Image (cartoon, rainbow over all chains, first blue to last red; front, top):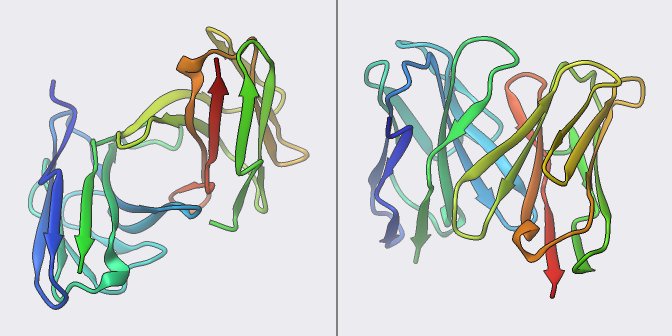
Length: 113
Length: 108
């Protein structure tokens, strides 16, 4: 099992450019998540998908859109990147149930100039 | 997230010393996760506590959950350089919410 995979690992954008971060999991998990991590802020939830076909806003959704393409894949799109979106982005997945471990991808380091 | 407060924010200890990291929730805890992150890498699951009073250990790392205080503590005994990294607590409040992390440095 590859677990949770993310592409790309690094990306540099100019302000106003758009891009999509890809995430896939091979553990047959229902729930998938997108977080951003900034120094001193911990992990903040951007969007999540509790099951295929559903998506919900997290703590910091502004400036982002998501698509749960199928059970395996959950993408995060930045339509018009801003310097405030410079961050490390993590995708995660979890089986249904409140006490199940959340598995994380390796992260995407995004810089917006 | 302000719903989960971690302390201290950073910690520098000499190798061999014991240390404790705390995580306090402003809401009822239904489960508390501890993760470790090395710089530039993803999160590694350490352990999960479900019930008040529960205590779990993994090698030299022990975590306890105090449901009444809505708090968990992570204790490392005889720290080693391999323990260095960022420790994050997470709790299911609405969705899995994380504290801001504790940066641990262990000096050889």
